[in-house]
Image (cartoon, rainbow, N blue to C red):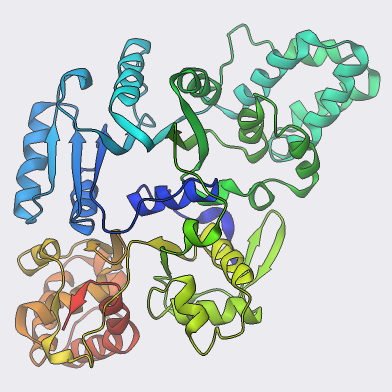
Length: 494
């Protein structure tokens, strides 16, 4: 069983942002059309370069903290043969950006001062096209206590005794996750509800400092500028039944139209950081699921034998052995597919399109599947002896040593970076360096180098001393398990 809450950070690729907006009815950009994408506070320029290499129709801009970082990032982009990305530094108001379709900024490591944030909001309003998407990662609360104190401050002063008691009963339901980890606060809450002395609980929530919600601050700044909140880049948080305790669902539903619904969700789900997606209005919208989701492809990177049978979520155990889910997983583990592709496949003939869409959306929300930019266009029979890198970016591995458990590769099928296990990446590297016939020998040379670094070697090799037989076995194992999948995902071409 997989724990739903252990999945990695959200995907900020153009296709993923468009998919989340489509969940709220915002018509996605047509595949293959040009676009402009900017990342402010681009802490990981390599990730942005890889994203640019995966979306050749886009123009990418990275806004760096200083000139030296920007120059180094530009040099790295040239080394990786990626020409559709450029890096800048300086006040954001002075950077010559075109009209943007996507703008991403990250405040999780360094919060902007009010003046800097005001400049940024002005830039966003000025440069983001109508229908353009803003993705902002930021801190919602400094700590879990601040979330409770904020809600107490916002609601408490307006209530009489009966309303306060009812409010605390709702807080008890909404804050199940919080109170399970804060027994003193839970005891104080229970005492206030039982005795009716709610003012004592509210007084305890007054720490002498003004609690604030970063979520509300963002809403206050963006809504008057013509922006509408369309979802969370961490897809699972668009489904409260997956991340909030079941007891809280009814109360959350009653709060849905309240201005503080999003801060309340933060408290219920125990979130200190958010990854909002906002849309610059006006935007083209539709309720037609074919127009919203029909042009995405969807895939699963995990090999089928590694996919869990069940996933634990807040709403209960999701059984992935259900017939329709099992069929979808079987196909998506091999190659990316659209909903139409599945419906025309023998496994999907006769399936209800709405049920297929719901099932795929569930797999995406669970972090197992992901929306993608395109599909592999088969050139006929695969000739393993002719395999080579499909993307110029990935050729850097021909001259670089692999020293990490995973390697970042670009994929024009995925429309974003693919994190490939070092074992697989080493075999692909060997094939590109020495050809298929001599790949095991090339791999052996790398294994001998890696053997001198025990921490990395332990994640790749089964024994301490590499041998020709080991290199041959690893090569054959990767080819059997993964090579066709990496071909289908556009990492390799034949």
